[in-house]
Amino acid sequence: MIVRKLQDCIDTERQMKSENWNSVRLSLKDDNMGFSFHITTIYAGTETPIHYQNHLETVYCISGEGEVETVADGKIHKIEPGTVYILDKHDKHLLRASKEMQLACVFNPPLHGREHHDENGVYPLEAESVTD
Ligand code: 9YT
View 1 (cartoon, rainbow, N blue to C red):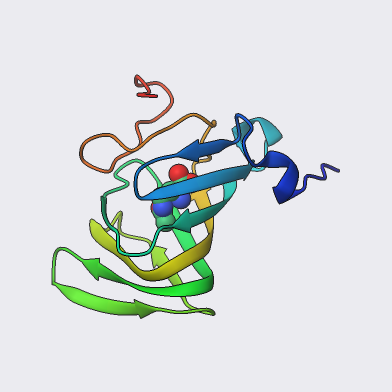
View 2: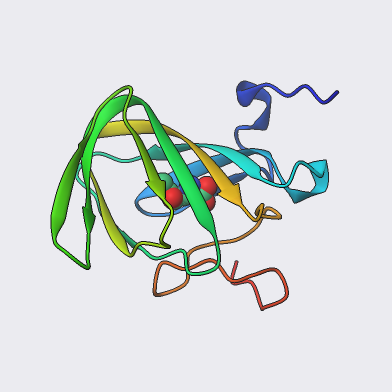
């Protein structure tokens, strides 16, 4: 069994920071679980374009408030504590936070750790180059 604490992972190599969000990657590919598990904070007043063409992601809102817009149909879904959104179609989307949101995120296939969104909001597969 593996045990980790969120507090112990903050400001370590497990935490990735960007202008709009930071993400603590509590479980990664090298845990051999078939998924990765992250606690992500989305900053208030931000809009992030995301398109995970190589990954499936499920996102559960723990706290905060925002919305997710699917680009293909312009539909806007409110995000509040207790909401889950599931990107089962590799949906291109816009993620907006009106209040800082804490989200629990699961990725399949798992991230290996240092991925950053590229200019299209995409994470490359690990075989491809990773921008850091
Ligand atoms: C909700 C979302 O996808 N945010 C971007 C960060 C991502 N969860 C990550 O890299 O951990």
